[in-house]
Amino acid sequence: MRLDGDDIAGMSARRIWRRGVGRTFQVSAAFHSMTVLENVQAALLSHGRKLSQLWRPAAGYFRDEAMQLLEQVGMASQAQRACGVLAYGDIKRVELAMALSNAPRLLLMDEPTAGMATRERNELMALTRRLVSERGMSVLFTEHSMDVVFAFADRIIVLARGKLIADGDADLIRRDPLVREVYFGSGATFERSGGGKP
Image (cartoon, rainbow, N blue to C red; front, side):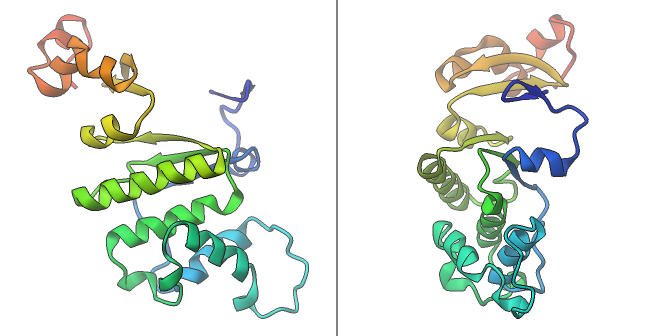
């Protein structure tokens, strides 16, 4: 596994983060007893960035930076609400703000729309695409919702049982006979190729 030409296999999460990689998780990583603002402040604080004024109250750490991130994901108006009372789609926005706290060049998203309704899925991915454009970062995401994949991915890599079966843009993937068999048909073609069922 390489990042900017450097082998990062076996590298600690901390070292990978320092190279400009952020990530979101399929399972919520937010502290539900804390406010939206506090969650983003905690993410900023955990990175140890510019932590010099130790006399300041904890609530003041990185407040401005946290609010800027919440503005970017459309959650500034809910900054003082506890994460535990938010709608699921809003929690995902908070976690996106947390993932942006280290200004990543590459953002990894694990099943970002899992458990979300169609409207929420589209809104989250449209927001992500806007942030990609504004921040000049790249996004690599895993996703099982094909409508999301086809609508938002520039390049699609299709796996079945750990085997690469297709790589290309949405039009190419839609037309790929093996992908159609494996994901939309009986899987007979993939079985004949020796990969087994997906």
